Image (tube, rainbow, N blue to C red; front, side, top):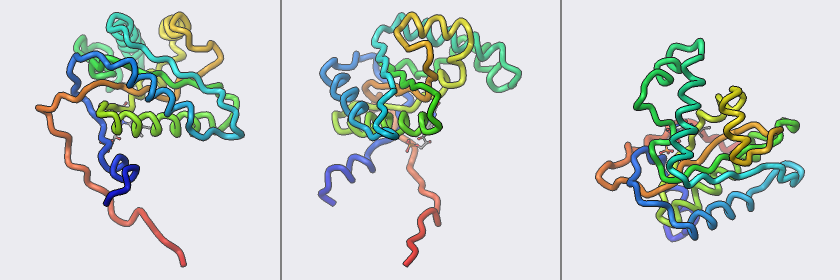
Length: 188
Ligand SMILES: Cc1cc2nc3c(=O)[nH]c(=O)nc-3n(C[C@H](O)[C@H](O)[C@H](O)COP(=O)(O)O)c2cc1C
């Protein structure tokens, strides 16, 4: 197969072990540009992309997410919250927070399109990535919200997903990708 897009789609995998090599700023900007080129319902483009490349700020964000989880009624979340080693972004050197106005029902779809664009752009540039959901679950916790507001996330936005970015630790091989059967039907 020599179609570069199809090759990139198949090559993309979720990476959960990163080296500490900082993400190149040129790569980050290209990845963000791929995000804003995604389609959006009615072309509203009401989304916002907040890229954090400060290890200190990422650590602080993770601590607040952990604190929010610790308050949860759900046992699994509580366990994460009380685990000092829990890092929702896998210590990646960069995290892009994708937020949107929740007023349109398709707001999460807009964000998902942008996120997949960023994943594919990252893959094509040799940058590893992973979808990170935990800020979506906690963005309305008071302390988390105050902090993300201080990072520039619009106060009327919800977080629909985050993209961890960095360089894969090549000593860890990705799990084999096993596709479910019978998920495609062509009706003639
Ligand atoms: C909506 C969505 C949310 C996800 N949330 C997380 C997450 O919070 N943490 C994580 O490690 N992976 C997360 N993933 C990644 C999936 O686990 C991953 O895509 C799936 O296991 C298939 O593996 P692959 O991406 O390597 O093909 C998420 C993926 C999607 C689409």
